[in-house]
Figure (tube, one colour):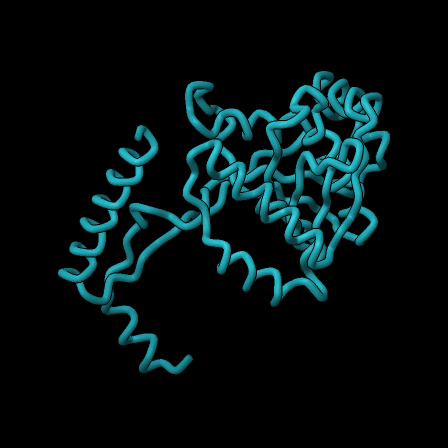
Length: 231
């Protein structure tokens, strides 16, 4: 980048984004530990749920192929509908899969009697294993398939050579249990993770008027989506 460009960019205002693309907090697991040490560091309830899933006959397979992606996609959007979460479109996820499936993307699926109960799409890059997307079925929810699936994801990360497992979005360690994110924050915390805070999302404002209009329109969109959830 030239000095001229730096000077031009310096004229623009930098502001904390009112609608960040990524959460400011994540939970990260150190994969240098042995499997026994990782298990011992988990909350006792998490270890119990892993063993329960195994006892019930849940098995986890890596299916990093088109069939696996189709199963993952079905469970992901089933979860979005159930939780009234407006995630990325099927077209978006297909593009991500097509670009990353050769070297980065991995799909793990938990089955019971050949019925897919939960699936994760995970990314391995630069010694870090990432868990950005997951979905689950309403069937056999008491079999705790997601607990076993996460444990198998941790073991896969170690096998691939990852040094850390980034479980992606989370609330802060002082989270309220009434928050809509409390459930999956607590789920990830059960694996003995460390809460990590990032710098957050910032916008470089090139046109203040356009930026204000955009944020107003985005706020209207949020209101519309909240109303749609209720309906």
